Length: 317
Image: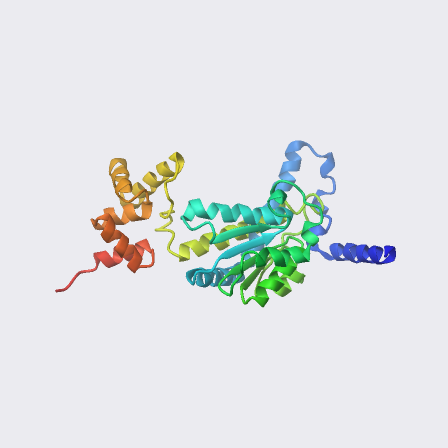
């Protein structure tokens, strides 16, 4: 047994040695000798390359967005799963979708190895638990309409690999986000997104460049998908629901920006629209009452620009 464990450890060490994200960064070998400002300059210089690495992946990210849109339109869900930093980033993006786009909280979900405790604490062995990766998706009654996004900076996380394998067996769409090419999660996913950001400022600290890259890709996936689902008008978040003071003020501002009306009119129409900015904007732009505006939106699948255009078309007797 001891020999077997040692062999497994040696194999894992060899695997880590092959990962770009685990390499030693030649630009920061002296970082422990630098002043605070010099340390920050090195970090900032390394971070500057992340957007360029993602730019190389835009075609596959776009294909993944189109897939997400297709599945969500048929009642599917977008499920992020990961361990440690990757899992926390998935949860962060998921929970922001409800207040930003007024979607049901079940539409975008974040799943982390080790469960809720792992959000704030390290859960020993959670990322290596393949059975849990499968079980966590089984508990959510995965269907062929769903999309599972596996997040793994290294590309080898057993929890994520098992989840992607199970998702494939259910007919779900699968997406992987990693910063290491030729890794298991990329081989398991239909859409493999791999921004190669290089070795970290601190060797192996993949919460840094790799984590930033993952967050940027998640922002792209969810934001672009929601735009394609009609959750914006121009570049305004018109589906925001005014559920607290800050969001109410933001909704008023969005209505005034979209229509050019005064704050007083925006507040008045928001009240008539049940605090839904999109509906209030349509009422102002088309001169319709709430019920008619709501019907217009339904006829245009929630796309405000289309609803405005339809109401503006000349009517013939």
